[in-house]
Image (cartoon, rainbow over all chains, first blue to last red):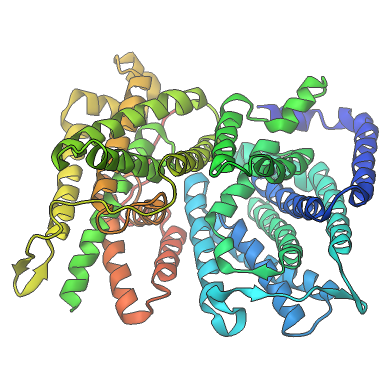
Length: 322
Length: 290
């Protein structure tokens, strides 16, 4: 498998970090000046891309690196959204405090999901996480006194230190979290944890016999990806300013999965590319009803069949760097 | 009251079981969990509706042709999508079927739109049977009878025919099965065809009870997986009993415990079963030689 060669090739690739840093810096610079050219809707889409990219980064650590499928990330996204929204609007906490606190709360839930995951693989894990997703979504729906139930929750614009955060402000906040997330994922994946997760994906037996504490790393992967997803959820709640339990369904979980698969499993660049694809392609086909879903599904299947490494993996191969 | 709930639960459980059997046949022979099974069945049901409504065929003819459509659809999916994925990680196949799920849903949406249709049933207006003072709707009897027939037919096929035994051999040890003259790709194609057939029948039986739309099978697919896991995915009879138990449990929890949390409670039970006994109540650990 290519992952094995990736691990073997790690020390030799240190020299290429320079160009990756340049690429990342260029991307961030472009993202920083983008609001000056975009209209309101374009800015909304770009913010959404940044938010989904944060989810994709987290999910990619779990599914791409550690090989653990999850169909409950939409629900975790929802829990993050609700936790942040409720802490801000009902408890009156400042947005910048409720966002990480809400995310930590969701992380605890993500770690709880990891407990059965320690015993389950592939299909069984998919079903268990699917079940957790349904339970979490249903809980949000039925806890009417707190969440407003199916009627949803309308939110006022967030304020930071007395200043109302507009669309541009929220975009820069999401971008800041994305950069932080990139930095975190980059460090995590290059270091000891990343190597351990990749080996767990390849063979749990081999990993265990090398002294890797599988249970601990799996819980770590679940918790970290839940944290990323919840932060994104907290940002999403204030981007759309109206949240409803219905929107955090299994379909969205499949959407998250498709982002990282299309972008490239187990790559950081792939998370960004996948999120961009997920937001932009349906926009291009918006005139035709059902076409976005169709194109998306077809691309998902074709990527699996023809280029399992995703768009990012293809791009890297074309550029001659593996 | 409680007897009615149990009968209703059994009838619903039989529908879950049909979808679950469709999934399990494919899973046991090819090791791939088909998350597109529900949408494949939905498409078959819409095809049956088209035969009935636009071509005006009689019900039995339409259903027979639709069943063949389901079979062919399964084989095509296997040939086009699954065959190239043989040898790649299991996760790839799961994600590919999730993608197919989205594709089929959109295709049905493009052709038939997202409004609801009424799917006719020849049993809808028949007088209910009375068994020991309990009124049993004819549709429930039909569901249960068809469910039993399918489980019986599948068990016989897999245990008593050469093709079926070859398929079981292929699922245990591909190399030896091939040496004995069993074609692996043919086994896989037959399994997918049977899956499409059984799933399609489930769709046609479920459509009259609810309205036919593109989301016909979404909930059913999840229930089928859940019931299958409960019983043990590698035992056909286990899957059947697991789905029946799920149907009854759901009806009873909705009626007596909490109507809104019925679904969530079911999932909590399934997660608990997975934690304690990942192979399911009736399942056994599958020994597999490379």
